[in-house]
Image (cartoon, rainbow, N blue to C red; front, side):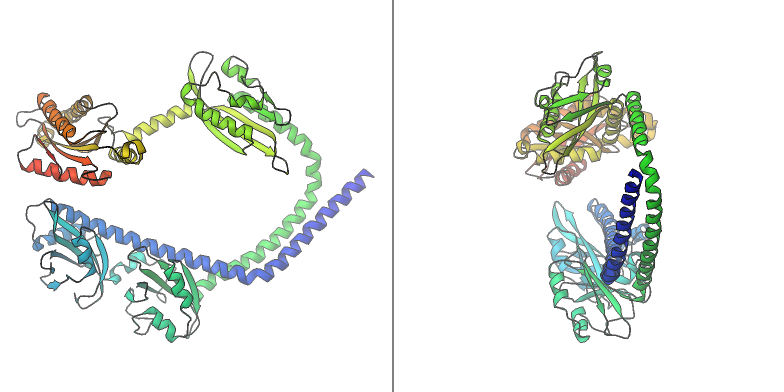
Length: 605
């Protein structure tokens, strides 16, 4: 009789499974059109995102190439347009620039490396860079008679923008690098502004039949552009089907993130159909395989049920053995009875019984957790008492031999239908070795391997975090940018061993002359940097003088030269409110020292 009831239950389960399968097949047929449309949109959005990212990556590469030239020019006393040809050799393989030029800020005249002169004072890029901002714009001022993209970077003399370095390139030159393999020769890419004016396209043959505005073209094809304009105004990505021509085409548009420009990508429908057809075939295959799988599952369910109890028992025994081997402490709590049961590993780990016998005990300080970690452990304990679903905390405990070791406390709470907590289960896992390895790796990532000073990334991060702390953000600080004088003569003449000694000694001198709360970093080569917290201009100048004197007293020298230092000092917030701003100001001050005799310091304007 019991076997008949069991068979009846299995039959009912199988019947419900098949009923659910046939319902899903019917639902799939009804919703297939919607699913295919969603899949189509997903494919279009994914590929247009790839094209966009390729475009932005290429623009970033061009900016880095041009910025390298600008940095060099800023370091020269005099630079002529004829000198640009030298740089074109070096950046030819990494850039798409076809022309370079220098713009005089006073006259607004651009002189190009090919000898042409062009008036650019009304151009947007000129207005941006004259104000000290790099810019990328569309340039239609007759250079070669074609529309071009132009990158511009301001050049400075004594902290004032005196000229602008520009590099131009046509959209066609970056076509190969931004075109994704999804977009073949029958596809078109257009860059437009928010009003739909076409700034550039990537092919000589034009889908738009000479229209200079994409909305005007779509209006001519009786395409409703109201929704397109609305989505563009909201900076959204979207797509639509254009069925007005000889062939159906999908057009997808996405904001580029530059100057409110948009990227329009048009591709024929056969480019999408190969994906959607695969999706339909895949869906049918999946349904068929699901039916077969469900039949197999129903047949074998009965046999698995018979073995379930035995398997669970064995798994429980294996888990207990794993706990013993790994030294894990497990516990189980009952909220209704307010009890907590901890396994024997607790005594083996700590040489004493657990200090918490009930769930409520977690609101009390733990006697064997070090004081610094009591706060995070109590916070986790209050979450456990309140029935929060899960939590994890790392803390340090005093073991029975007096050593301090890291442990991790992990728990999970099960609730009833009303949301009230019923049971909690968790583990205390020893993680001392892992935490020591993590600490070691963190030190390697943050420290300069030769001197032990902070590397550039760690130093910059510490400084910027300092400005975000409320108690420090409203106070004055100072950054000292230090460069060793005559270091090259010692390094080249006597080898890297003596050079490394000079770098290490410099680090030790810097550390001995600042407070433990200040930061000492090595940015690379013989360039060091110091960040003084809570220091005004007078204190920063005094400290810079002390460092110069200390390094001079160290007598790091060879037969050819004596190592001294030049220091540029920038103060927060007067000279900048971020690491990069302070660095630029200090670098300008350092440049003045280098040009006036070295072995001294200068304050940034």
